[in-house]
Image (tube, rainbow, N blue to C red):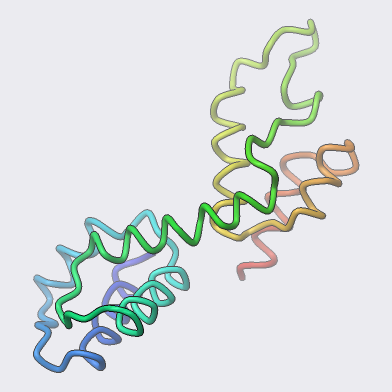
Amino acid sequence: MNIEQTGQVIRRIKIYNPAFTDTDETIIAWYELLADYSYPDCIDAVKNYFATAEEPWIMPADIIQRVEEIQLKRLEQFGGFMPLNPQDEFDSNGNLAPDYKQKIQHLHSLARNGQITPAQYDAYRQDKLTLTQLTNQAKEITS
């Protein structure tokens, strides 16, 4: 999420709680904590908070907790651990690829952030898509 989107999250909070402070300093401070999370997930987390919370004072941790719950539900659709397909997992000598860890983190990030579907992952696992093609499809979905 970028700084402008963080400002939009703050403005959404102010709609639900007019006493909430929406200064530039607030936006910057919240951005530092929420930057790694997607804008749509943060907005959904704010809506969920105000739909269920008894207190009007929301904190970044409240949003992060709800976003992480959203992300875990998405990962459950993929059945837990998501292995790479063999062409990405191993190098040409049959050894674990040197960038294995980065690839697996990237793949899990795509799923966690709702950028790929289980059907796309299945196509990837069956070697019908490369990780690059899967990533490009993810960019198309989120554009």
